[in-house]
Length: 123
Length: 377
Ligand SMILES: [Zn+2]
Image (cartoon, rainbow over all chains, first blue to last red; front, side, top):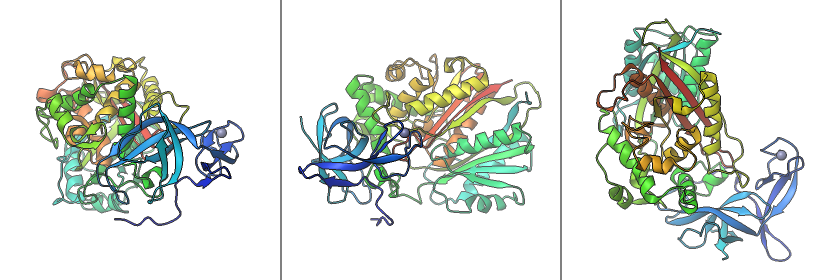
């Protein structure tokens, strides 16, 4: 197993006063592009960005179960691309080892033991 | 308008798991064949495409065959590294910067990885465990969900390309598989099974580019284009990697003065996973949107079909040593346009197209895509 070095590139997640998990990202001041990362500029147009929270709810765009060994992760594990409401498409681990139903709802539930964004299926 | 650039010679090593060989030997196999094919013994400059080879690999392998003291440039563009080297070499000849240029692609995967490529942990989605098969599996699952393809159509791409490779002695794998056998092979990332994923491969491939001489049958570059991906996200109407291929293809076809990809006779595309070929044939405009799976299952993209795709066996069967792949595709189309492909020959092919796309950087619709149109004069 490799031990990743350097700062963690994954989205930063935090809990709101209401107890919801949200991705602390950025939104472009020019084109409104939502970004899950604290990058200095908008990846779509290069304009300035401002802090923005996304989640906790979203829609599953697609999902799969990884069944091969990947360093730092134990197969099988389920992944989904989730389009957060009015937010970016984020990659998240899905609780359990079944793919999340595509087109269905998902809710951010914090991070996994491995530090990955995690969601549960909501409907 | 400047004189066209010719692909004067091509060559490749054998493709496969060859941990006992080193990159010096693999590169020499490719370059010596390309030099002999072109009838040359030296070049004015070299572009080398590779992804995982160690620093200095280009000079290290080239000095062993006496190519020293000339400009050598190494490029990395994920799976499109080899064709990136090719388009840069092409541009150098086209603009007169150099007279004769070697493009070389190489990769030794078997000694670098025990299984699939390890995702890059400095990338957010790589760090989260999104291995390449999983990235493509997301597209495949989405296609199944929207009804744009069926499991059987996904498998048909593997059946077709493995059958094509039976006639390619340099391919890593070949064979007569059934759709059921493909679907019954081990699940890698749902819904993609083992036989729908390219293997771990070692290999090298090369091309020599010069100004065209005007000889009959000479293979020339009719158009070439390269792009890197724009953001791919919730706003994208298509699955990952579709739009970068469509945009790059439009650039290349325009440069070639062609109206559509359906004008070409033979195509080599980046089928690292079965869904990749389905999405790419649609993105190129070779088949109508949503028809990629149907085309594979119905023989449209098979040898003998209206639009043969991957007569070499593609990445799924020839193998996919990342940096070498693009130049292996160029070699195959060059051989096809010369009529040298034996039992996998597309009869009367005059125009051919190569598409390579590589990814792995989160948020982008691919790190890069290269599309090239070649023509036999
Ligand atoms: Zn913007």
